[in-house]
Amino acid sequence: MVTKQVTGSPDDADLRRADTLGREIFSDVANKWALLIIEALGERTLRFSTLRDEVEGISQKMLTQNLRMLERYGLLERTVHPVVPPRVEYTLTEPGQALRATIDGLCDWTHRYFGHIEASRRRFDA
Image (cartoon, rainbow, N blue to C red; front, side, top):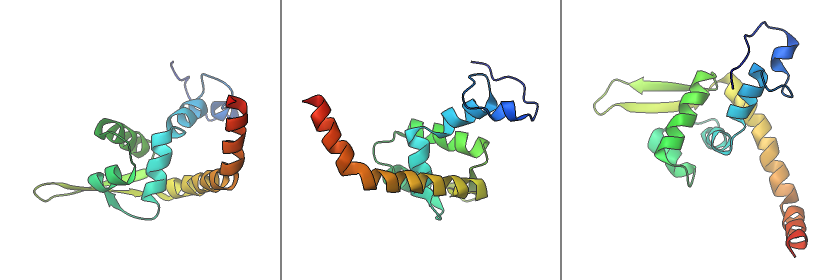
């Protein structure tokens, strides 16, 4: 899919339209790995290996791809320290912290309705 040229109009942020930048951003940022990375970073600065340990089940490739995407969108900052071996750290930017507040709401919702959803799944699957 090719994203249309951005004009700055409200239509560019319309998530219901397939050819908008808003849809592209939503699609990229609303994946499970990106959400879990943002949640893991929180208000901390973490190294790649620590992030990989914190986000259980993520491969090195998926972590790298998602970190690059989040950096491209300005949601996290990557700092390379000029030492041998290189030390790379990641921290959320202000927009990343704002998104984290939304993700925290989703996590709270999950905890609140976990039992309800679990029971509904059992009934549906029976």
